Amino acid sequence: MKMIIAVVQDKDSNRLQDALVEKNYRATKLATTGGFLKAGNTTFMIGVEDAQIDEVMDIIRENCKSRNQMVAPVSPMGGNADAYVPYPVEVEVGGATVFVLPVESFQQF
Image 1 (cartoon, helix red, strand yellow):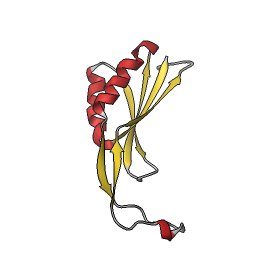
Image 2 (cartoon, rainbow, N blue to C red):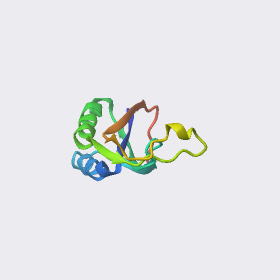
Image 3 (cartoon, rainbow, N blue to C red):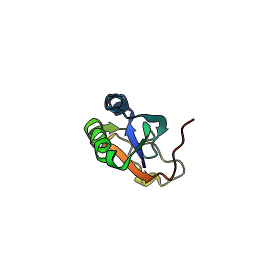
Image 4 (tube, rainbow, N blue to C red):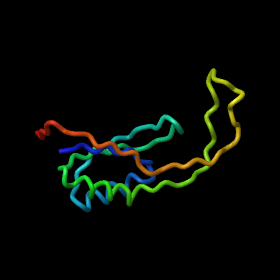
């Protein structure tokens, strides 16, 4: 058994949740915050059998697309102000960061 932990952008979370439910996968959904853009994202924890990993990864891949977005950088707090860029920059956001971890035991009460 494996635990899939997928960190996705908030814009993709409802679409991913609906796709997982449609395929009968149960997931725990957590509201989280990213460190780089300091923006909200969603973390899914999905317990699956080893044989189901590829299908769940395909579902994540199909529903969590990366996109370019203009963002205003956060001003440095005590950092080097010389490197600070005060105007919006285009960055790639979205997609998913996925971890697959072994699960030693699973209990449901």
